[in-house]
Image (tube, rainbow, N blue to C red; front, top):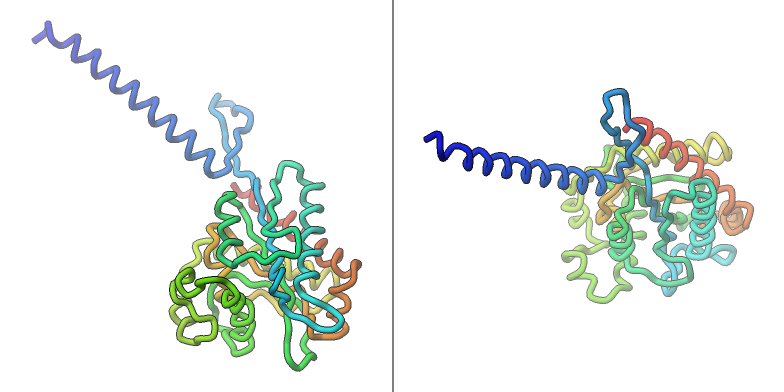
Length: 286
């Protein structure tokens, strides 16, 4: 028995070393996938890892054959593209280490699911979709920011917003199959939709709240608050995601403000300040 124990012991040690190597490799890959960056060694001599927000996807809504909300004094697709590009430039200037990805940088049409796919392929840490609101009466005004979900404030007005933003899929080829038979005009579809659970809801509501606070407190604009609704472009993202309604194109005064270069810069600056605060808080907490 003693003669055979040495080879067995050596074999056991070799297996244990191999196991340790595989475990360390798996740990390294896992940490890399979660955007964790090594810090200086602590007193214990071991490396500490800290979360860093590395990639943001900016999604200017509509584009190309889809004008979005449209009035004689303003067109949504042009407004949100200008705001999105300004926002991206602000982030790139302030945070060179953050990768900024746009779902579109020109007047082009991008399918809703592809917008989410762009964010998912880039392993984004945050997705911000930029839009303008509209109402047939022309009197409503103000901003509102949405996370994906439902809340106790569900109303016909909110449902109308969701239907309008989701109806763009009807311009896409084979949308019934691509969106699992979802009908943007069917109330029943939204009942089923509400069962979807957004795992990133807490952080989505966090950034949404910061954006609305900046609109209201810094720019003295009327904030209609943070809301939850079932937007397709938010459903398919795998990270915290919000849809920002930057104001009402249908309101002549607010529409002209949004169509102006000054107004677009102010809106972009508000979203940027919210992003900066969100990034700081998130990284400090991890």
